[in-house]
Image (cartoon, rainbow, N blue to C red; front, top):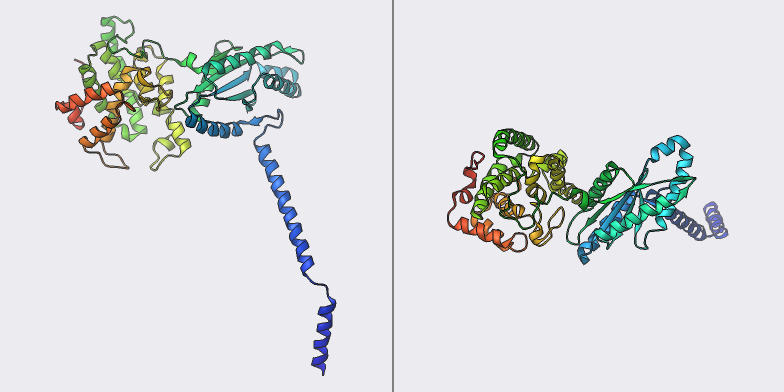
Length: 441
């Protein structure tokens, strides 16, 4: 009887208790509200992570992400992309004299001036403490430089907190057929640096400040001398010094990048042979020789972690690697005796169809020496062992070069190379027998 009574009491208690289901539904609804609140908070935090709290502009992180997306569109639709960097002149002194609070107010008002003169599709960001960046989709070099000048003039005409401010600008442009985000920002920073050095309150485009001397990058000059006006006697005295300098740099490069060992000697010998076949004079051959020896010297500026990485490079690492021609150019340009050699280190990764780097030159815009060297460079690379593959058979490598005639390579250079190889030229047919740097005589 006692057990029956207990069962009845339990049944009565269960019937009298409210169903747990409504309570569970309330808990679920509350959890969903909390999750939605977290989503909104995360979205606000993400937005704040991409924004500058003082000016309300997006920050550098956002700019890099935006340029990456725009670059993909530019490549797809073959449109240019430009970037302006604007630095407020003498702003550090203003902060010191009037305090950071006054500096912050001035920054906000300068931003208002800049935004009032940019276009709907332009994206303004805060690049660093006193540098602003404006990304310009579908804008070529003249258009970007014109806007930079307009922003400079507009800023200089405004009285801000009783003061007149000036700005310096650096402008860069990627063509519709090549380039990277890293090269775009690097070139804008370089142009800005030159604008500051030349007295501030000016806007310069990278193409204006870093264009090589005309005698060094002739578009179509096979036979015109590229050497600086140095007397033959002086040249004879200086050549051993120049050679020692170049060889010293090559040893440094070989210490950083073991793959370059022997490569420079081989490509130099073969390039000289092809250059002679195409009618270059002895003075031009000096520039060809030194340019070929130094063609990869810009890799000195590439971090070891990228240069010596055993596996594949990431897209970001490739962006940095593709800057080595720019590093070479900046390294060699200040040295007068090496200016005639610039076309090979700076332009040997350009392609006939305009898909190369760093400037996306096409056709005869590419200096003749670089067009000639690029065939030899690829030939030696294909016919040499690499950590990731064995050397190709020469006939296979030759077919590859022929297949890329008129796209990657100048067809006239390919034809000359093919002719020399078919004639059994010893340098082209047996490049790995080359042991020493070739003489010019």
